[in-house]
Image (cartoon, rainbow, N blue to C red):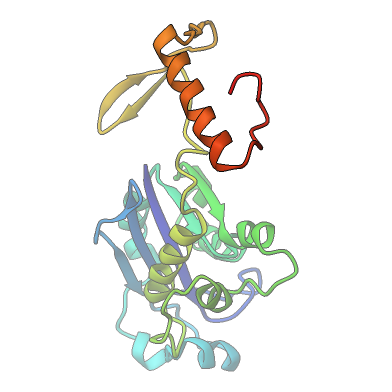
Length: 234
């Protein structure tokens, strides 16, 4: 399964009010292993970031001035995420901004290009109800090293999210395995075997095994001072 961990940085909090995406970071996981095939863009949004947003990501208008606009990278971005499972922390925020950018570029909404979108914030709230479930809080709880996260960065946060997700889902492969009529493993079809009609034979102990069992019970009875609970057998 191809999974993409995605994060964005934006000029503010409201795509509806004209805030724009200024950074996209994507990290690829295939069969629960990082591939190194990541994608990262800084983008020129054509507007300044709000002061609160600038304090979070540190991406100044001057730094972004010579970076491409979203329209210039839209095709490459969509080709990269095509038909993958996309994993995002607080997905409605990022997807809302991506939808606004795609609409400006004359493209279909984000979910039309990908297989599915998984929100790890929803997962975390189900796993850790009543606790803080920010990415930093999850890193601390799951012992993921986030010491390099002094400012928010889309690629770094996507890498941290991949580590967090792997820890959150550790051991669930067998529980969530598809048991359809056929599966694929390593590119090879694996047929489902129906064991519901299988009758297991009952094998009775033979005379030698019964004799050996009686001897063991006698030894236990002797060493325990006659406390064996099956004295008639001993």
